Each structure stands twice: as C-alpha cells, then as structure tokens.
Image (cartoon, rainbow, N blue to C red; front, side):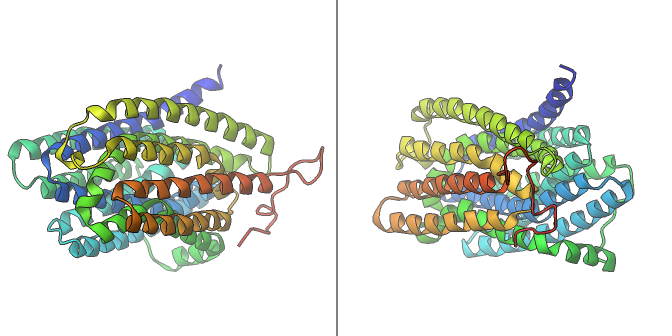
Length: 424
C-alpha cells in the first residue's frame, strides 16, 4: 500500500492536469463547432493538427530524450546541463514549426496566421517543459502550470465569445497567451535563472547524442506522416471544409489520446530505469498499463458512439457522423494498445525501429487514404488511418518482443543499447 500511494499521487497529478486541459479543449471544440462555419472550423482543426505535429517533433527530438537522459544521470549538475540543452533545442524547434504553420495557413488562405503561429510556438514549448519537469521529479509544478493554463484559458475564451469579435482569430490569440502563461509558471517555479544557450558546449552535447537523436528525428517524421497525413491530404484534395466534419468527430475521442499521453509521460522514466536491469518488470508494466488503457478505450468509445447521433451541427449536416465515429474509435483505441511498446522502444534508444515501423505504416496508410479520396466520400479516409494504426500496433509489439527476449533461459535479459551496440 505504501508503494501504491506515491504512484497514485503521480497519476492524479499527471492525469488531473491532462484531464483539465482535455476538458477545456473538448468544450472549446464543441463551442466552435456550433459557432463557426465549416470552412472556419476546418481551419481551426487544421491549426490544431499543426500544433499536434509540433508537439510530436518536440516530444521526439527533445522531450523524450531529455526524460531518458535526465533519468539516467545521477549527478544534479549533469542532469541540469542536459535539461538546458534540450530546452534550448525545444525552443528553436518550436519557432521553426510555428513558421511552417504560418506558411500553411497562407496556402489555405487563412487570415489568422500570426496568432496561429504564436499559439503553436508556446503550445509545443510548454509540452517540452511538462515532460522534462516530470523527469526532474516536479509533478506538482507541472500540475500548477496546467491549472493556471486551464483556468485562464476558460476566462480568456469566455471573454472572446462575450466580446463578439473575430472569434477564430481572437481564440488563437487567447490560447497563445494562456500557453505562454503556462510556460512562465514552470520557468518561474524552477527557482533558477532561465537559461537559453546555443554555445559550443550545447552543440557538443547534441553531437554526442546525435546517433540516437537522428533516429528520433526520423521517427518524428514518420509518426507525423502516419498520424497527421490524413488531415493534410483531405485539406489538400478537398479543402478545409471537407476536413471539418472529420475533425468534429475526432475531437470526441481526443481525451483517449490525452490519457494515453499522460500515462506514457508517467511510466517512461520508470521504464528507462528498468530496461537492462529488470526486463521482467518492464513486461509487467507494459501488460498492466496496456490492459488498463484498453479497457478505458473500450468503455469510452462505446459511450461516444451512443452520444454521436444526438449531436446537431451544420458542420456535420452532410456527413455520416456514426461512420466517422466508428473509424475514429478504431484509430484511438489502437493507439492506446501500442503506447507501451512504443515508449519502451524509445527507452531502449531504439528510435530506428520506431521510425521503421511508423514509416511502413505511414506509407501503407497514405496510399490507402489517397485511394479512398479518389474512390469514396471523404468520410471513408479514416478507414485508411485506422488500418495504418493497426499495422503500427502489430509491428511495435513484435519489435519490443524481440528486443526484450532473453538470450537463454535462466539468465538476465540483455540489451545491446546498454552495451554500446544500439540500433541505427
């Protein structure tokens, strides 16, 4: 029982913070679903997709490596050095992806380019700080930042709606400000000078880590293609308005992704400490958390499918909401089933395998999505995305089974990564 209490506290802090944010984003999406046109709601959803792309890259290139290497460093000074290096890299990466988002908004003839770019920058950088602070053992600070972000986001968006101006533009401005506030709370709570550096020591540290980080970069690209290509392809083939009903239904299932992400952030540092030392414990963690996530996915998905027929909106007027919901459930439920092997492969430093599995699935999924866009209504493209996720699940579990397999019965498991023979 004494061992369960700290775990329960960490889980409440992590899930609690994610739940607050998820609830706010869910409510905001429902509000905008009923107040925006299909074109404007499609642009909002695509901007959120680009925010998700930014978070994927930041997580893969800075947040997860920071969590792994900080967790392995026993010296406080070296852990701090890694924290500064990865935070500096995260900020540069956030700025770069926000500029890409601005260019895409211009291509889609959006006028909210400035506010969207700032929003993506601070949202992705806040994501990095959340993961690194969990790795540094500061869940309370993360929870405080999440609370501040959520509370002020509710107030700010409420004011935007009451004011009655340009709802889409001002909503992104409000989200940019509240994400910046969440960043400020974490930086101030660290109680040390805020450091950002691109000097030689930071570059040397990155070069020393590049052998693993380069695979993480490729992994981020394949994960983005595998997870977000569907939205970008639909918008490119049929325009933002065609993506709007798909995005409207997908938002009902995003709490599942939030829960899976929170569990991953909590469990990954522990798995990183266990791999190579007690792989049987790694298997137990993967099995128990996958079972729990699977049960949550089944229960929640059934509830959403029961509610969807009663949702009325102009955005959904010409789409088959139940069909989109069924495919969306398949996507998110499958994602929850492979989150544990995914973070285990990352903890092993096997970013090459993660990149390979998602790359294969992305290629297969994109080909299927393009075929469906040419042969069927846009509602059916989710079938291609679901098939891609199922393939990732199969390949991920197969890969982690091979990496953690004992060389011979009765002997401890071995890891080539820890002995200096990493993949890639």
